[in-house]
Each structure stands twice: as structure tokens, then as C-alpha cells.
Length: 340
Image (cartoon, rainbow, N blue to C red; front, side):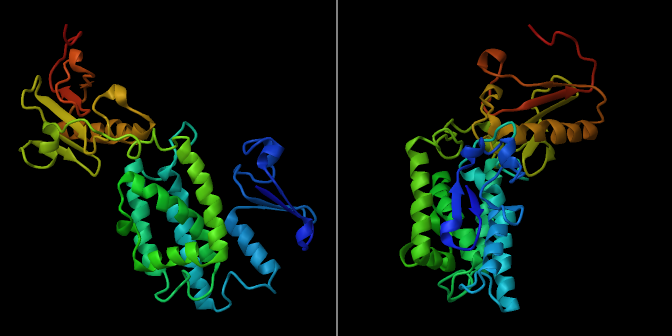
């Protein structure tokens, strides 16, 4: 939305959809909101536009100082409020799209993380930090009165309360006693919280009715293929000659090598990657990591200046284990074609 404030009286405030200006990515809208995001507060009389919710809220709090303040006057209380807002904006809000968006060519909802699973785990981790920041007595995040912290976090909380259980996170795993008490108060007692909940949850209900999560891996799409021998290797139930390991991949020597170096490289989380042809935008991170990080590290360790990278995709192409794996083959002169 675009808010137009021409004065301080309520009847001089107009709310317009970005679609009236040609859409979020239109030049007209980006002239007032350079990132193409909403909301944006336009102040024609001041000759300025203020994008971003946090900036708008802080301006209005200062502009209408005679009203109950969103930022406490006490420096320590204000700092507690600000740290909640900062935690949300940097570590939760920045990646909240991982709960409901598909990655696109120009959109990465996982932020600094290479996969949806990592981003979701990070949100849960940050909610544990938010639990520690929440006031012990409440009922609001920073004490007995609402602050900017509640305005910032609550709309996102509506998202995570609906979305995280779709990815098999139990509510008790990400909502501690303080956050749970705060959530109940905002939903059941606070009048503004109730209105915000109704608006945001209503929009999410519309998403759900249209199958928003049906095609999202980990929510609507599950990896239901049977476990393979690689799962037993990863679980250390079957020994292997490990060559390389990091947080994302595991590499070990093939038990039937066709060359002095014959290493198998696998993602630790299969996540539907039974075959390369099943790769989806969600898998860009792990595939890039395998090619740009793990393979060069293995090649360096093996002392190879030439090698062959093979992916057998499907049973007719000699794939026998349906957990994506790359063969790194080298250490001798290789011929072409490799086989008939």
C-alpha cells in the first residue's frame, strides 16, 4: 500500500494500491519506493517518501508524540524494544519467504542459506532467541504496554504459526512459554492484535484455498522415496572410505573403482533429489555447492589436474542408487566415449 499524508487529520490520509501506479516494479512506484516494496508513506507536503514499515512506524511515533508512544522513553526499555525489532528484521523477516515462497530467477527467499530447510531451521533458532528477549511478565513482548516490538513481530507471527507446522515443526518446538502467552494475548485480548490477525490470517486462508503450499517442497511435496544404501552410509551403519565431508555433502570412495580415483559425492539431505532430472529451484544451492565447493576440494585432495564428472540419471543410464550422486573419476588417461 501507499499511504499519502497531506496533513495530520485522519480525513487527509489516503491509501492507494501500488497497482494504481502500475505495480510494485513500475517506475512510478519505484520512484517513491526504490526496492519496489510496500508499504510506503508518501508525504507530498514534505517532498519525501518513506518506504519500509519500521521507518514509517518510527516517524509516526515521533510525529504524533501526544499519543501513546510505541518507543519507550526510558533508554533501557527503548533498547529492549529495539533489539526485538532488529532481531526480527535481520534474522526472521529477511527470510520469512522461505515459509511460503518458491525461489525464482530474481528471488531467493532463503537469504544467506542454500536451502529452504536451513532457512526454516534458522527461523526456529531465532524464535528461541526471541523467547529469551520476551518480557518475563508480559503480556506484551517488552512489558505491560504495546510497543513497536509487538507491531513488528505479530504480523510475521501469524505467518509462522500457520506455515511452520506444514514443514513438520510442532508448535511447542518453536513457541516457548513467553511467546505462547504473548501470542494468546495478541489474538484473544488485544483489540489491535485481533484486527491484524483477522486481516493477515484471512489473506493466508486465501493462499491455502488456492494450494499455495501444494508445490512447496517440505510442505506439500515430501520425499517419500525409500531409503537407500547411502542413508545407511550417512548414518554410519555401513562403513565407507570417506574422502570429504562438510555440512551439506559427503564423499567416499566407490567400492568398485574404474580408475585410481573414483569418488562418489552425495548431498546429505536427499530432499527429493533421487535423480538429477528431479532437480527444482529449491535445489540450486546444494547443486551449486557440490559443483563449486565440494568437487574442487576433492579434486585438490586427490591431486588431479584432469578428471571426469559423471551423473547417471535413471535406471537405463546405469543409475542403481536413487539418491543423487556424482562420480569423480580420474588418475589415469580416460577414453571417449566412456561406454556404449
